[in-house]
Length: 105
Image (tube, rainbow, N blue to C red; front, side, top):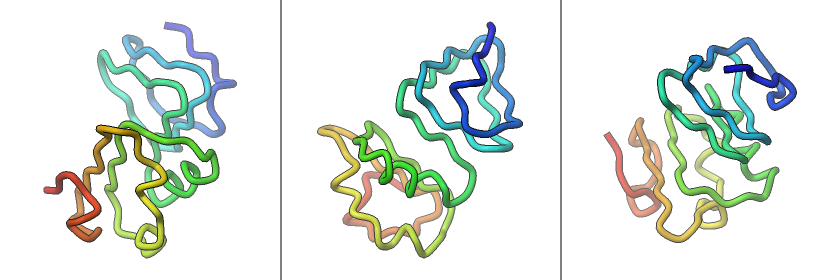
């Protein structure tokens, strides 16, 4: 697969050759995307606290939000504005109020 690096704001990152990547995505430094994945338009894949603030800046709504870090900035985000109908918020670190999320570890 040939990857058009103009789709990304930063690198280095690793994307396996079987991955499909649409236009208009953000993939953060150090990210690894493995076999048979599909990164769809407007996706933000981020390590650290940059992802959700970018999502807010893009004023998009998302099918899924996965919170994998515990930064105080995440407590002040209006998650309802980022969600589509039937979207999910998964909180890996059990950081957010349980009423805001759909699942956690």
